[in-house]
Image 1 (cartoon, helix red, strand yellow):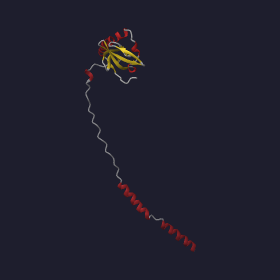
Image 2 (image 1 turned 135 degrees about the horizontal axis):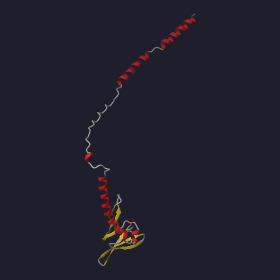
Image 3 (image 1 turned 135 degrees about the vertical axis):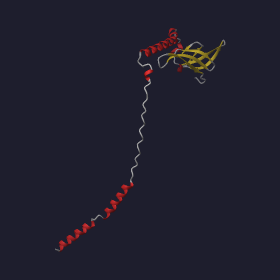
Image 4 (image 1 turned 180 degrees about the horizontal axis):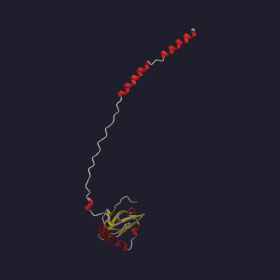
Length: 179
């Protein structure tokens, strides 16, 4: 009986030790933390107001109309006539030896005065050439228009991005350190 009383007392002591004395403080702290946290939500911006625009393209020429196509073809024919006027004389003449080299492979190394007319000295692959005004240089139908002591000025005929033949200026500058 005594043993039974001792077991009951020890069980009661264990139950008293498991009371929620710290639980109340923990629950209070958790509730305080929940109340302290405030979410920061950015307000959504107002939607932009749609303003309808009137359709004004009714008075314009439709993009696929025959009028627009005809005017475009007339413009292309006049442009191609001017373009062919530039290239036809270049294709009809006999090509000169210095037209086989690109302009970047050439360097002007000096000039000579021959009878009052300047002659440029152009170096290509260790060879020296005399170039007079009116001669052709480079692979883009480049014709020498002027020679000074410091440069050779050319007029080239090249194709632009649209495929039209146009004139473009180019120049060879004097290089004093050419070896």
